[in-house]
Structures are given as C-alpha cells and as structure tokens.
Image 1 (cartoon, rainbow, N blue to C red):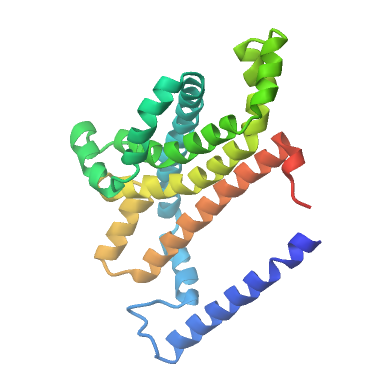
Image 2: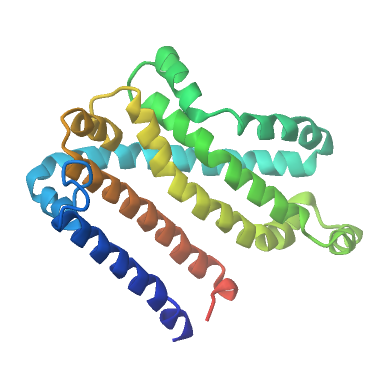
Amino acid sequence: MESTSRKYPAIIIGLILLAFWQVSVDIGMVERFTLPSPMDILSSFGDMGPVLFIHIRTTLIEALSGFAISIVLSLILSIIMDSIPFINDGLRPFLVISQTIPIIVLAPLFAIWFGFGILPKIIVVVLVCFFPMLLSLLEGLNSIDKDLINLLKSMGASKYQIYREVKFPAALFSFFSGLKISATYSIMGAVIGEWLGGKDGLGVYMLRLKHSFQLDKVFAVILVIILLSLFLFKIIELIQIKVTPWTKKH
C-alpha cells in the first residue's frame, strides 16, 4: 500500500505538466506547428495505422536480438574475468574506454562495414547494452565474502560448485540491476542504428516524419519508444521478482 501511495506525487505532477502543455498550445502561447499539444499527439496515432506496427516490430526484433546477445556475452566474459585476474586487469581499462566513444560516431562505420540491414543495428544494441550488464555482474561476483569462498574450497568445492551455489545467487541482484538499465537502452540503441539507414524501424520512420514536418507524429513515435522501454524494464522487473523473491520491496 505504501509503494502505491508513493506513486501519487509523480502522477499528479505529470498530469499538471500535461495540462499546462495542452493549455499553452490551445491559447497560442506556444505555436502548434513547433510543439503539438498532447491531444494532437494522441490523435495522430489514428493516422499512422498499421504502418506504425511494422516499424515497431522491426525495432523490437533488433533490440531484443542485441539484448539477448549482450546477456550471453556478459555472462561468459564476467566468468572469465572473475576467474582470471590477468584478463580482468587487462580488459577492464579497454572496456571503460570503449564506453567513452560516442555510439553515434561508431554507427556509420558499422553501416559501411556491414551494410544497411539488421546486423549493424544489432551490433549497436550490443555495444549499448553489454557494458552495464557486464559491470553489474562483475561487481556482484566480486562482492562475495572471501572467507566463504575459502571455506568452500577447504571443503573440496569445485569452481563450478562455488559459482552455482554462492557466486551467482549472490550476484543476481546486481545482475538484474544491469539488465533493467540495458533493457531501456536496447530500444534507444536500435533507434540510433536505424537513423543511419534502413527500410523499416521506428528510427527510420521518425526521420521520415521529421523531414515532412509532421511533428505530432514524431512525438507519437517518441511516446511509443518510451512505452516500449518501460515495458521491457517492467518485464525484467517481474522476472527479477520471480527469480529473486527476497529482493521484492513491500
């Protein structure tokens, strides 16, 4: 009950901002052709019809494919880096440096190297999603009490048993934190990849609408991107509650 009541301030403030936005456009304080009102944005969904769902499907395929690949890569590399300190010390600086390079700079190169199909978009999603998951999982694996690890080793436990019984269960909370961040990034990464070329996808569709000055539909696509990101975030959150019920907030 307490968690539900804490949502009320955000809902109230959001409704106030939407009302102010609507009134500002209606009374001419803001020109409609520069900033459509919330009602204009909602009504534009009726004009887009099934075309919008085609672009949503493409973006979701790219985002979920890249997200799944990121999960597999982060699991494999985190185990390697956690098990072999030399690799951890050698790779970690390069992984951090890789995150300082703007993805909008790398994306055109992927289009040149891999064409304008789905592959460069998936690679962009992987680059955006991979690091938060890997870092969260590594932090979780490194947070285990060393005395507990030594105790298991003294009892003859293998590395596999240590990971299965202690390390992975203890790292789950950190891992899901990285998953939720990456889930929201996955849609954004797919859209960024689509900006650089393609036939379908929300990023491509948004550029077409922008070039034809249909700003109400541009904002409608932005709203769809937000809703998709929140939907994936919520799905990961529900999975976390099922897998780690002890982390559920009451």
